[in-house]
Image (cartoon, rainbow, N blue to C red; front, side, top):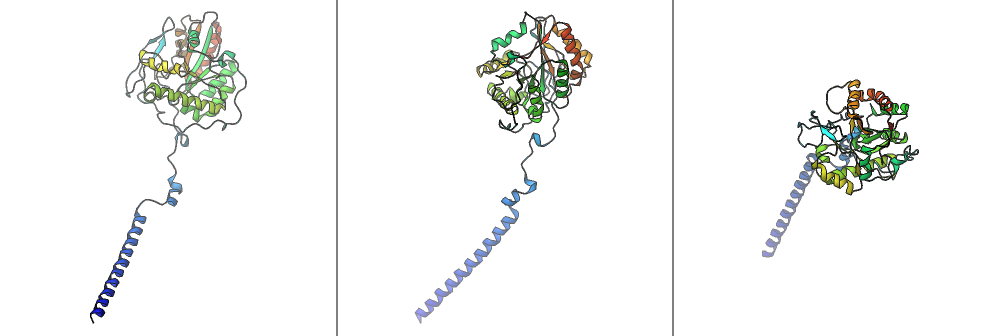
Length: 349
């Protein structure tokens, strides 16, 4: 009888344990189902049409940047006031007062440039100026401001390309049979690679004006500046489908001032060379509207008898009157005996 009672108790305990196990399994299954219904989406849900990655700058329409007022030292604080450089009587830059935009509208990043080979055949058609395709040192480049053997004008355009104005400028240059050097911003070149190819195919020079042109990023440190230059050079080579080096640089705002001395030194150490200007049409000296006549007058003021001119102009948004003034500027310089040339190193080498 004792053994029989013990056996019955064991059976009851086993039944009880089995019942508890079943109940726990049911509770676990219910909890798991609830978590799936209210928790993170599954992999299938991630692949749906509403879960695509955030758009890049090239996936949506963005305004073309307006040209910043030229400043000797970049400022990190929005709303600050800088002084743009204009050439003095000796051709060296002097400072004049003008406000600077409080915000640069292109302060966004674009995706990495495409790899070489994505753009078809190389966009090279022969060099109109052999000097522009030879390696150049900083010492050689610095001599162009004081050439005395002849009168030479180097037309330069910064902050492009833009669809609205760069093509118009190229049309005028083609009609006048004049070559110019374009200092490109990377975010703009990514949007308009066909214009970059047109510039090069038509014999113009290409310069590096940094990838972003965002002062607080570009001038964060010499390392940041060099990273911008290398990224921009890689983009130019990709667009033109070439392995040439494009080492001609123009600092955003100019390379002037002691504070930028470490940047200038680092640029040269990395094999780049930089150029500023000694003549302007004044299209970046103020944010106010300037008629073509005023731009022409400003150019004449800043020539000051110099035999070699590096003329600063812009092809960014808002420079309609620069386009309108360009034919007269070209005619005036010709009448004064200047020939037009590309900046050394601007065709790559």
